[in-house]
Image 1 (cartoon, rainbow, N blue to C red):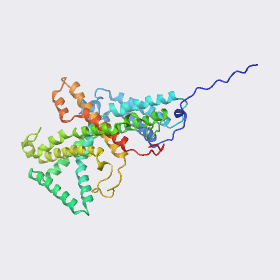
Image 2: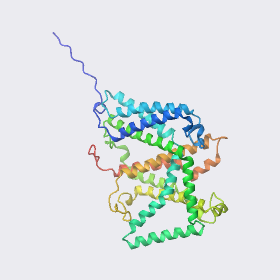
Image 3: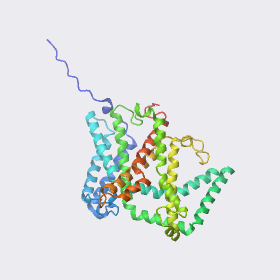
Length: 398
């Protein structure tokens, strides 16, 4: 009498069947998906509230200009409902790897829509306005606080501030001009605020979906969800390609910064000197954006500099401490994403704008090289993180 062998059940990926630890990333993604459902439902109820589409004064930069408002609301509700389940399932035990890769497909779709299709150049404009408004005060405060107790540093900061102030006053930038510049920034934010908030909120959701999807894909590939190890390809020559990417990214904002700095001279580029003399607030406004671009270039170089690894002595409280690798890389990646989206918006107006090819917008790419700036900054941020990341807290790999 022969016995019939018991069939062996099909093997599934250990990473797909193991119960992953629920993280704040998946929870935040699910919560954001709930908000997407609420916003989509509100658009269906009150279409006039929707700040893009037919209600958008900057429709030429958006991919949603010709999409019906109710269709946007319906898609937001559908993606939100599906996203709630998918985000929670990414932290649950899965019966098969096939289902796991299905969740990857859903995450990729959500990332594409919310991080790449909905946002546009207004995301970068919002960041630029905020930097111009609060950046100078923040930097000056840090410099003064860090220079306290060191007479030489305090003298340097004082002299530099005096030189800048003298130059501004010499060109009519008095207190009233600063007030007008600040008022212009606030009014600009108020006018474009709903659209900026909409694309900004969408970008946040897309970033959450990207992080959740990457973590889930790493588990399917039996890698650490936190750090992705083991990996090989990118890390072999990270110091070399990272340095070149960083230098290239640091050079990209300099044309715009130099253009705005010419507003301090009698030969301002792209602006009539009579207009600047009649409106000193406009001069301050342009210079603040120029200094923000210049600061961005300097901060980019920090990704390959010593002070990007150890806090300098002029930074209070944190001086001498090791800079954690994660936050600078994350900020640089967010800015890189915003710059890349701005490049897509500008190219959209160049190629598909009203009247066909737009030569003026094409020339603007020489001052704003967004299409190469964004990818270079993203590569620089990734190289910085790969070069400096230490031992993983989840898998203890180093």
